[in-house]
Amino acid sequence: MMDSSRSAQRAVIQFLRSEEENASQIYRRMKEVYGEQCLARCIIFLWCQRYEAGRVNIKDWARPGQAHVVTNSVTISAVDKLIRQNRRISTHEIAVELLISKGTVHHIIHKRLGYDKDCAQWVPNHMSENQKTARMGVCQDPSATQEFLH
Image (cartoon, rainbow, N blue to C red):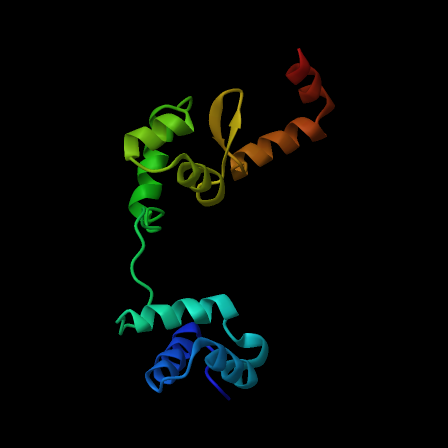
């Protein structure tokens, strides 16, 4: 089976370009070999231009921007610590404090820590066993329900 990864196809483009094939010929040949897995025509033409300009590396260059490694155990525990210190803290305040995006803070709070906002406070999304038992006791005992309501 033919390796249809992007880097493998870039290596083929680089080889065929060094053999003086033009971009259209390279695209036709690669489409025959890779079929549906073939890189798009515009991408093949782009890589042909890059190789003509002297590029030798088939890997993507590093892109600028924030790395996607901020959701680690240290960051998660820092967010949890801030929430435990102040249950009314906002996602914006956490983001500013830890120098991470609000989207990352939101992901950590809701997906990793399981918190929800209730009455302007961060609370655990799931009840503890003690909370579940207390709720069941109130629901099953009619006198406790009356006391609970008054």
